[in-house]
Amino acid sequence: MAGNSLPKLFAGRRRGLMALLIGTGLAMAVLAWASALLMTRLLDGAAAAGAGSGPVVAGLAAAALGGGALRALERVLAEKLGQDYIHGIRKGLVESALATDRGPSPGVTIARSTNDLSSVRNWIALGIAPLAVGIPMILGTAVALWFLAPALSAAVVVPLAVLTGGLALLARPAFHRARTLRQQRGRLAARLADTVIAAGTIRAAGGEAREVSQVDKAGRKVVDAAVHRAAIAGWIRGSAAAGAALGSAAVAAVGVWQAVPTPTIAAGLTIVGMIAAPVADLGRVVEYRQNFKAARRILAPALAVAADAREGRRRRNPGVIPQGPGAAAGTEGGNMPGSLLVTGLSECRNCAVPELRAGPGDRIRIVSADPAAETRVLEKLIGVRSDPDACTLIDGKSLLDSGGRTRRALLGYAAAGTHLERGSIARSVRYRMPDLDPAAGTSALERMGLAERIARLPRGEQTQLKRGGEPLSTSERARLLLARATLGDPPLLVLNRIDADLDHAGTAVLARLVRDYPGVVLFASDHPGSVAGEYTEWNIDCPHAGLDLVWASYRWNGP
Image 1 (spheres, rainbow, N blue to C red):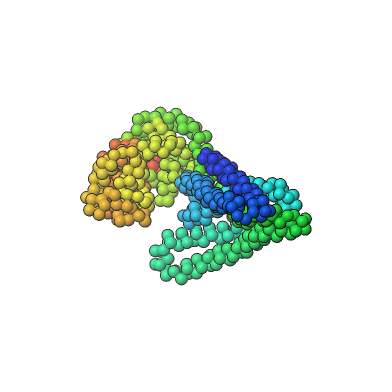
Image 2 (cartoon, rainbow, N blue to C red; image 1 turned 90 degrees about the vertical axis):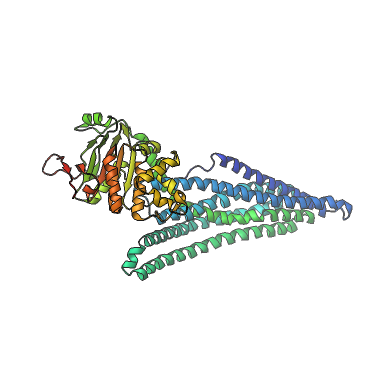
């Protein structure tokens, strides 16, 4: 996908919807033509008042009702077209947000999913769809007027041409003002999201008034930008309304000047009246188009993130291990059943992380002088953070190049401070392996000592988790994460300071779990003795003074 483009509109079922919209416009043109002929017949005396006028009046009524039904059908088809299109974009935005560790703030993502997608939807449903209906209808009525009286056709076409030129002149400033409004809305959304997330810290520091003031300033900028955009939008819509009115006046004036018969003038006015709504819609179409262009500049690069990530995975060869000292040994170790090989990682520029090889039953603590570096390396190792040179082989399979199902089978991950996704407890515990029977999730909860606590909840395992894991406590959420991470005993279990969220009983459960776990356990902890009795340290800091990496095994003896 190009960085400045969105998905194709005319693809899949949307092609059929567009064809139906064009057909609706042609049908409206036919009705307009029929109405003009019937009006002419009614007024020129061919059907005198009395019994003979009944069928003509009935025909006019049927044409009017048919036009109303077609307008209703147009609205439904337009909404289907717009909603189908933005539904695909919405999924792409979520995919992009999950595909990179450098994604936008939650506020910006929410703004994209509301304001920007609304602009796209309006352009599709209220812009392209009316054009698909209106253009065939206007052209068809122009042809009908030509057959009635060529002068009347010119009287409609000339004002429309002038209107089109005027709208083209207003389009550029409308685009710039729409883009400015979008930028201000995005900044306001990001500030609101960050303020809500940091609400506790703000209250503790007594900064409520200052933060409200900052939000007020950002909101005022949005108000000003919205008013400026409304001004140019008003000119656009006013011009379109004036164009429709001028068309009617031009038909009447030209008809009188050219001595066109009165019934023909009435028929022409009938036709112009039927196309007045599509002509007035042209103003909204121009406005929606500029809003769409402003939204596209934001959405297209965001959607490209997921496409780039997919392309990157396709280009990587999961069977290739970075070349260098120890590569041959790494290949041998990486293909052993249940083995782990990590190579190619870097913590910072010109600072390569020593490779790691481990087998089932190994307990490895990641060590660094900077605790944040431990988290960064663990997240690169499992693919949460991007590192193009990283290679993680588990049981001979490349973790970073595998699909979701394979990744879930190879890796279990639990980190302190994790926000649980919205959903039931039963869904959460089986999140890695949703195809498993619910009884497997219950068994995993029992192993973590959570079964009784969850059974006491009003809805048991069907209790809905909200706001990151409520109603569970911090320690219970950590146990739930452990139950999820160990479900199915993946060959690699990564624990990122999960013990910091556990209470005394939970720490005992964790120690027992790590002691009996059949696969490789790689963990970061400030109190490693509470996690594993025996472990090997993996020092990820750059070796100094040319010293080789020193491996040391430690045994912790508790009190």
